[in-house]
Length: 117
Image (cartoon, rainbow, N blue to C red; front, side):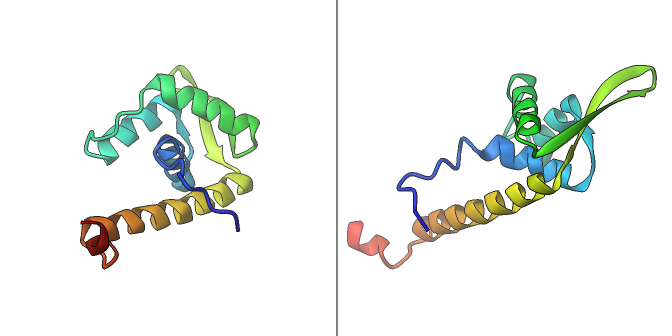
């Protein structure tokens, strides 16, 4: 397997969070924005300008599907994961866990860190 020397993990954080939120239930865009803000203790605030283009791109790639529904008199577009989106989420979770684990090892004084300190 080819390895990236610089994983693009930070740029993928909004996508990872959106896919994870859609794993359990369908949601509309602004609901996703609020869930990211609340779920991360307001550490990550991915606004509509990030979330909506991301959702549209994921839909074009077949990772999510959308459905327009009227709720309480308001028309909203709800998004849900497709099987391809679930696979993508699993791949991204695995990559995130590897990177986060490696960073945690480095920050907590992994053995190889002694050689560079």
